[in-house]
Image 1: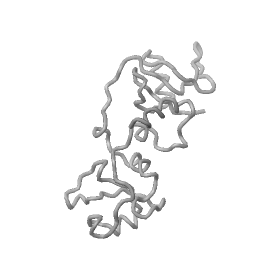
Image 2: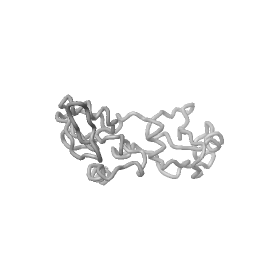
Image 3: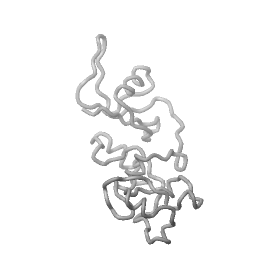
Length: 170
């Protein structure tokens, strides 16, 4: 049984993934409603609630867009397919600033890539062109679907109708 719940805004736009416990609190406070129920029920002495898989907030909530999404290691790794952007390795992954901070590069989606420890050490404070280590893909801000779901294997079937239209448009 999934322990995570997809949270949709009042406009049916995915905005978060929360725990089942948090989803139940939102439901009990009448701040959300169940759109898709998972298997089983959550039972208490005086009530029984279907296990939520997708909930929708009753009131619209403003959420940050695009550049304002906070950079995180988990999302950078997912965006880059959990592979070093220089050699393709999947072991000993770190984050690398394409333009090093010591050379004026900032910590932004467009300047941070996944790198294995050996490649990160070899590149050091050099620019990619100076050492011949150009990232395989240009770093970019992740789509909303990538930001919310960091592994395709963790997407329950009940979430797909709400995530696939967004992945196609961004």
